[in-house]
Image (cartoon, rainbow, N blue to C red; front, top):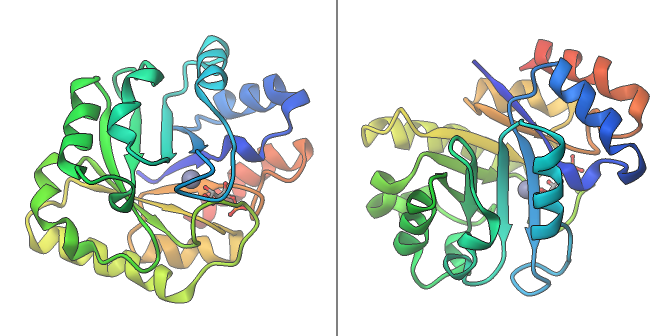
Length: 219
Ligand code: DX5
Ligand code: ZN
């Protein structure tokens, strides 16, 4: 079953409750939360107080994408709930395995996020510690970018590699320019979770409900 994870940095803040109502009615599986520290990536977005407030408004599990240096030191700031995902970038830590173990110890599912230039094979010795793999199809930091074609093709390489190593259980999430035009190919290349942003239905409240249905029909 394919899943959709809307990117909350693309949601109009004054209409947050209306968006959440639609997400719940449409059975949205995750909410994608981009956390940036202005160092690992050149931008700031959402933070721990936002996450705390959001949890009071909805029970949809969070899918927290940590684009921050030394994430293993900050996992406990997020009060992760069972069934939620935390994703870390290998380049952001000197201790990737420890970061993944810290996520699991906090009760969440552990995901590794790889940039367009990063090889999935470099994760060989942490596959046992992973529940998910986040394949970035843009360089992280900003919404509204164009997808990098090789990174879309890499989704399939990742699936093949994970299966060949005996990890068909690891889910693949795709993030960056997941548009109606590209989502079909991303799905055929075996992405399981689709981060939806400004490229699809997060471009005005009236687009959201029909856009979610359109996205489901494509993936
Ligand atoms: C990048 C972000 C985005 C974004 C998705 O770090 O995770 O990919 O919110 O939005 P669009 O659809 O604009 O790429
Ligand atoms: Zn993201």
